[in-house]
Length: 393
Image (cartoon, rainbow, N blue to C red; front, side, top):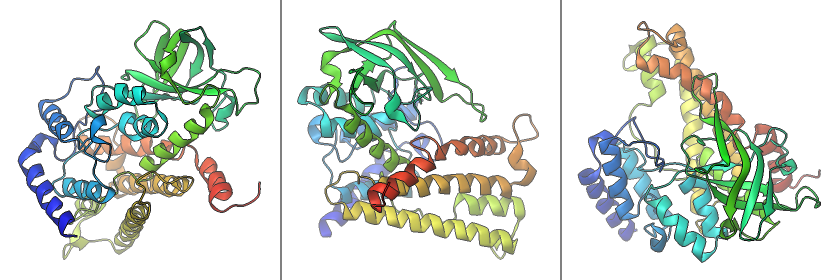
């Protein structure tokens, strides 16, 4: 314990001295994209954290991490939360493809891709869903044909998050066209900036376009960018989804909650008033309290799951439990915040609504997707029934 307390003291001092003011609180977070210009403090924060290996603190040092234990990484997350420091780097590189390559990649693949991810030099996107292969992902039809030293790729992906700004994609493709649908699928990596790849953003009800359609017309992928065995990519693809769901569900870096009032409490007081430093309306106070208690219990459960998983790896099918409940919590928080603001929480444009009110509306609309992406609620319940509870088909 003394070693961990010493580590906490060291982290606290370093963060105080090195985290710029412009990297604290809401604001820009680096994704690694070469197509997005970073603000000065965001760039400084990324460079300093990457130099310490703290963008991916539990990764091995040789791949750009710091080799921290799970307990040390949690302390880092807690101390960052205390000073409201934003993550220095986010995205599918560190949360999805990076852990997958650590588990399944070759030494050459790890050496090529992981340090660049850790330094924030590349943004990744996911090529999974297709127009006729969403929840039934194994029905995918995008083809990758063996051309000797490379694969030739033709087909279409949809709901490709961040494809507009991505430099690389990890994708599931069909490489054996006669095999049963769960067989004959391979997991490959390919560059986005090539003539055979076309990206079309999809505009959502929130007014943003984070999701895209991606078309492949004789795009190519190098043979050395096949991850795992040819025609055996389904297992790798499923494992990556567990990493994704652990992030959505709050397992990744589950840290200690900051002291003081939450955003919901502050919003309720601002728009509904307060009496003796409490939310004025008793019914609203009860609703906010229940949500805060559920959120705290969920956070503590995530911490316990991380602590019990001493291997440091993401749990298996149990990640679906966290994804299912965590996505619901996110939706509930967005809905409750909007309700607390009354008609001010329905602003879309114009000077009559301030920036926070307009953002609240967009956050509420965007939250509707949390129970869809990463696997729908129905998919998660099916996995829990089969893989966690052991119920029959």
